[in-house]
Image (cartoon, rainbow over all chains, first blue to last red; front, side, top):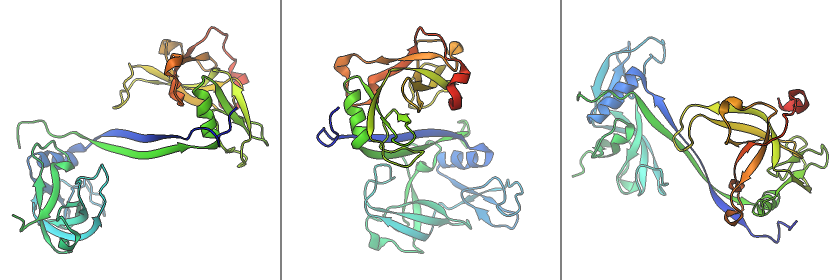
Length: 152
Length: 164
């Protein structure tokens, strides 16, 4: 038996990966179907407020919700965190911000990436608009990221 | 809305990337498996043998010391017939994932059972490792392609003790 101290060093990538295919049901299914058409929708609660992404049930009362309402596509950055070193799986290959974005007409915020190029261009309250992927598929990545509304 | 079908499902990927560096018991296990040998570690207190080798005993919480070579034959302690396809797993359905307790080891591990009909798999069934050709051996447990039934009588379930 050779000693581990004198032997070669064994090192290898170890990837734990599992792709879940998840049924989305009628409400999130509608949300993703609308994304494929480059539209964003939420759902109205009994108290009049609008949830984005839409939920099937009211988070307080548990009642079924059904009134789909269009929102955005522009909105306001409610909060953000700068990612200076994106990982391979991040939506952008350059520094960007993860942001909670409250779309116009919505009362809750959606998490997505914002591409401003530099951290100093990010601010809470800034107006943003979606940048759509060329070929949409019916998933959240149909929005590549958000960008400043006044960007050319 | 277009005439396309509404979206009914999405894929949510889960991925963790590690760089695993083997040391101690793990490195020794890999050095041996590269030579076609299965060498585990024995706990100095409870005397259980772990294959693949562990640097410490999960039961006693102390370091394992003694190296123990075990057989590449063993017994199925439990199994699962997989009839549902998984993305990333390119095996013909149905197939059998089995827990195998190697002769001389005290801890079963999960492995792939092939070369038998899934209807014929039993707890207590005797199986043997099918190794890759020697020239392809590397320091990896993948040197064992799969397990297959071997021509030995079953171990009675009651003799498998706590494993069933």
